[in-house]
Amino acid sequence: MSMESLIHISLHGCLPYHDITLRGYILSKCIILVDSFCRFYAKVSDLHSEVYSGPSAAMANPLVAFTLIKRLQSEWLNLIYSDEAQENTQDFRSGYEEVEKEGSLPKLEDLQGAAKGLMRLQDVYALQVGGLVRGHFQRITDGNPIDIYSPTVSVPLSGDDCFLVGKVAYELEDYYHSVQWLEESVRLFRGAGREWSPENEGTLEDALDHLAFSHFKTGNISYALSLSQELLNHDPMNGRVLKNVQKYERLLVDSPPLLSTDTGLKRPNTTYLRTRNTYERLCRTQGTQPTHYENPRLFCDYFNNDSPGLLLQPIRREVLSLQPYVVLYHSFITDSEAESIRELAQTGLRRSVVASGEEQATAEYRISKSAWLKETAHPIIGRLDQRITLLTSLNVQPPYAEYLQVVNYGIGGHYEPHFDHATSASSPLFRLNTGNRVATFMIYLSSVDAGGSTAFIHANFSVPVLENAALFWWNLHRNGQGDGDTLHAGCPVLVGDKWVANKWIHEYGQEFQRRCSPNPEE
Image 1 (spheres, rainbow, N blue to C red):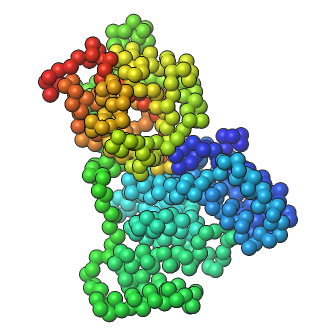
Image 2 (cartoon, helix red, strand yellow):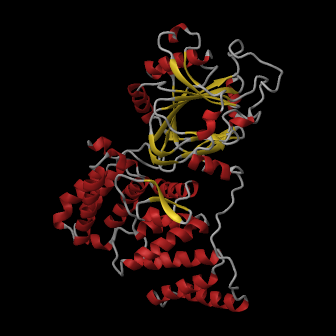
Image 3 (cartoon, rainbow, N blue to C red):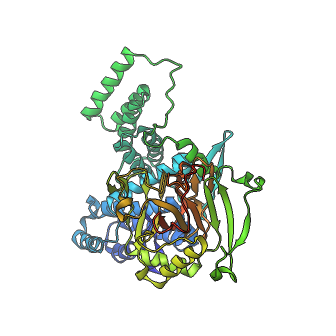
């Protein structure tokens, strides 16, 4: 595997992070540096031999991606500037800064985003934190842990890995997640004894400190006291912790805990995602699709749309839903075409935005990177437009349709339930002066190993990622009103690197292809 293709996974799924650069540089310096650097090299070397030189599917594992981002953003940096690096310090730091200037190393926001991505996967797919820490993707079913995905290579997390995830949650005041991840961090740090590594950001004392306060915030004061007392055994002169111990003791005297008090962690509610339970159920189970075959009105056929261009080579069509009308076109694009589009989009990928009033902004409910490709970017774009027109009879040329949007979803990448059409008259979508988005044509440019389905919330079904296929649906009724049943979501990518291309088609220009109707049922 070449250095260029060795690592190609990040939070948003596009930046190349070359662990081989780190590995080679440490090797060249290892002879003259202290033991900790050689041990760090050995750690990286073992991972390279087991994971990065193994099956390509191993690199799609979000735990592998998270630990890689952490190693390049945090561990290497901590090691370089640690007290252990006294010998040959300047030379080693200069080498690191030279690599850093190239701009290929992940930033702090990438590392924090990767941690949030792991917590998102934990929630949506009901994954057990203890299983993730051991490198397993497990869900509790009928009291037993069940593997929902078996990675080709299992990568366990360290106490410092868990501390970083827990700390990200802690700083967000998300104590539901911080407790779970910091519990694992404390367990692993305890198991390692007093051994400390200079590349680590956290210690047992740090984990105990954050975990104690997290339990206090969730109402478990007695456990917060116990952890704080353990912390004082390691740091007896810590005045802040001493004050916390006194505070917790006073609270327990004033309000003794009841034996029946429920101290179980409760997942925080969301104010913006009212359909969370349905959304997550569809992401986990793919909804009612197993019973779709019972509906005689849903069918598969070879479709040519009475178009001369498709008479000799019709496309396989699968009607998935009648309300809303959703169709899956199999083998819409070839492998080489999909690869070319991904390559064309690479240089222009930016964090995806959503409409916010009259403006556009990034949002936590949409985590991905996207780029817009004009027809002039490559002949393939024009050929895809022609193919879409043959299948739909719609005018897909700007301004009657938007440019092709290519989207990449990395670790935990997702797009929570939303409409493609504008629901406000002030939406930026109307700046084209061609009406609302009447239809969506979405092309799957890659496959994924797990997750990433497209879930239609109110229609109660979801569509798994099918490489080279395309989904088509109408966003508006014939009277121009938005179809509420098109509420849909891009489920988080559990394992893999998901690429899609969206072609949004507007109302104007389609007057003779899709005639208006005053009937609200049409």
